[in-house]
Image (cartoon, rainbow, N blue to C red; front, side, top):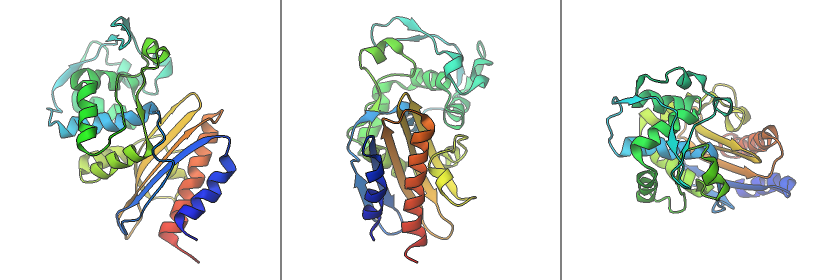
Length: 263
């Protein structure tokens, strides 16, 4: 049975939800995509684009950035703040009023998915420049419009969106930059793709979730072979854990097909 056939069997059990999958194997060149051009809210997977752009634009990563919690809405320019209760990284809020190297903010943005750090980085990079970098790399559909928790923009439908295909493109580009890979490998939220793999498998990835959305975009490094890219985007699960469980099942299916092979 081919990988695509195996994946379609798994996905058939989730007909009530939308699930998009993009896979690329650096070992064999195999590429499998199922609904991979379906555009969805990017959630925190857009932080992968921010990280990649920070490196591609050759910005001084050691420059100090003053930590403030004041940002301008894309909707009307009014001021908004990130709510610490909706953020997964209290450390960044403890730095308010201080200067922190851009490199450290990038680290918090990935390792703990800090929303405050993300917005501070985006103030320095600019959303349009981030999207332009994605276009240069061949990601033609991803749109990075704004920082996170911009409620007015959200209500107007001004959201960061992407496809599984485009996240796979960004991961392929990221694989050539060891500093990016090592940072992604330190992400602390591992309930998706990593949890479907044998213990100890290196996974460099970025998750993202909001209401009824759960995504995981990963470079997977099996021992003794080249890595593969796996992106799973989901929409429609009532609870995060349900989406993560589906992603784990897909991750396990890919591993068994690609790494273990027929038995």
